[in-house]
Amino acid sequence: MWVLGFVFAATGIITAAIGAHQPALLAAAGASPEAALLAASLTGPAQVAARFLQFSLLRALHPLWMARVACVIQGIGALALLFLGGPAAAAFALLHGGGNGLHTIAKGTLPLAVFGPVGYGQRQGILSAPARLLQAGRRCCSAC
Image (cartoon, rainbow, N blue to C red; front, side, top):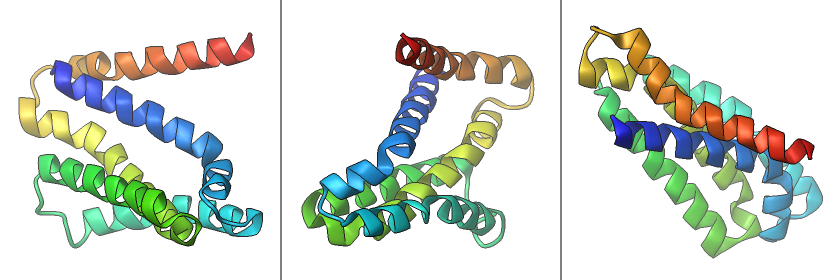
């Protein structure tokens, strides 16, 4: 359960940081300001599309595999941006958004699939606490 809590906290912080800085990140990778904004605007639709895909075609896939797929596609997007630079801005945004959309659902379904329904609410509270504490610390520090 500690590992799962760490993964949920890490993905939450990384996703929040990328979301806040995505246009600047894409521009720093070589995309024009216009292309960076356009690519960043694809993140939200990619999240929704990934959730639709998960609930339709990939419905039978175990939540553990779905979480793995989410991590892999986000990693592929990061590698594409790292090695290809600005031309991969849209691919990065789509893959990052898709992975984030899958992670959002996995945060609810994975603990249920792994640990079962007994104590689900309490377990969800425990698993989400590290991410919430990190988010509160980030907000507190940015206000100073």
